[in-house]
Image (cartoon, rainbow, N blue to C red; front, side, top):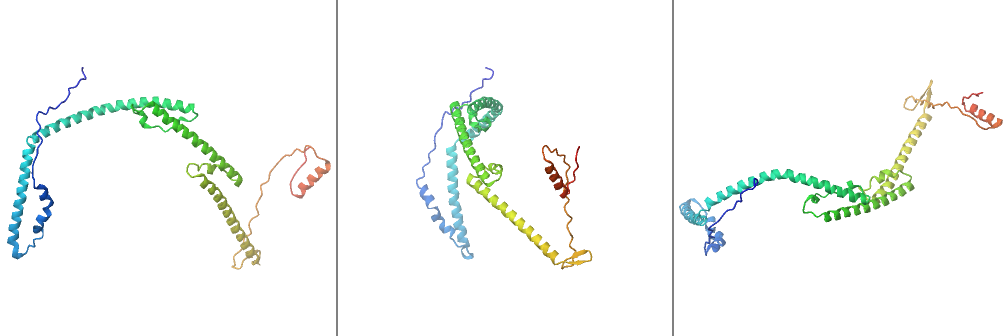
Amino acid sequence: MANEVATINLEITALTPAHVEAPNLDDLVANTDKMLAKYKEFPVVEENYEQARDQRALLNNTIKEISDQRKSIEKKIIGNWSEIKPKMMAIEKAGKSASDLMKQQMVPVENERKERRRVVIMNDVTAIANEQGVDWARIQFNEKWLNKTYGRNDMISEIDAQILQIHKDDELKALQINQIEVEASGLKIDADPYISMLGLRDLVDIKAQMKRDIEIKAARLAEAKRVQEEAEAAAKEREANAKVVGDKLVDENGEVIEKPEPAIEKTYNRTLNIINATLPQLNGLAQYMKDNGIEFRGVK
């Protein structure tokens, strides 16, 4: 076949595990600090410098002997492994590179397959949701459903479980909305702002907030009324203690008290058709309008 590739197999014909016997090695390791203590604690001064130099040379020779033994053992144990290892690693590296290249080409194909599978799964999700009266958009899509090994029955079970929970959540929310509306009606306030809090705060807290808002509003109104009354009382007291100077009214501080301009009320022009009235009633209505400065005229 054109796309057929060769199989890579490595044949190992001989492999002898190494075994090194060193009967006193564990004891030496365990007593290393004790054996080196005399070197670490050796006080080097002018008088014993030569002795210290000789002791250090002896220690270095001992260390070198151990190091030489280790390297010799490693060389014997490793044998021709230093030649075999890089060759095997070169094959591994080249194989990994080829595998990565194939993976790069496989990913787009795998993604396309997943998207086709997503479409099929979303059709199932939509159909199941519609059958059970739920908006399909409320179903949380599980990316594991796209795996070929994920069973369809398991997926459907998960969808059914989500829909069941959605129905329970909707029933609970409807009950909570009703309780908020009843509470708001009793407090004579708009329920909508508090309904929007559902999902962010629990029902008990929302109800408490409704009462707090009523208290805060009442306190603000009371404070505004108090401030207004104090201002009006202060204005009256200022005016009562003021003196007339010429055509002006001057307070105790010598400041002129400005009289506020009277508010101009908006007037309206209306045409009324009186359907049924007695003459006394018409005369009484005309007199009322005349007494209150309401201009009117009869229409023939």
